[in-house]
Amino acid sequence: MISSLHWWEDGQKLIDESKFLIFDRRGYSYKELLQHNNWPKNCCLVGTENNESLLGAVSATEVRRRVRDGMGIVGLVSNSVLQYIKQNNLYV
Image (cartoon, rainbow, N blue to C red; front, side, top):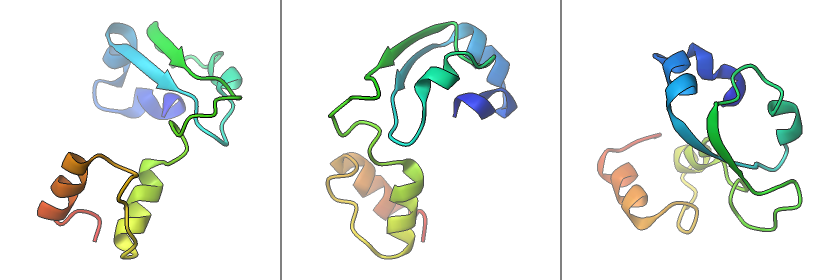
């Protein structure tokens, strides 16, 4: 997300004024992103490349793909998010 954040509506304002929690994500090098022009001024990096937690293990793209393909997402998202996706018939 860091590399495309400036394309978002009010993206530059977000970069300049918002506080971010940035989670390391498997398959991506956060060290390269630290040097990116879009790296938010007010952020906290959570985790490292050796992070053993599940944070960053599942992407939103994966969740959408699993819903679209009729696969379960229990345990990948919170119960309230799961209910919202079902109630609003998202990603199908």
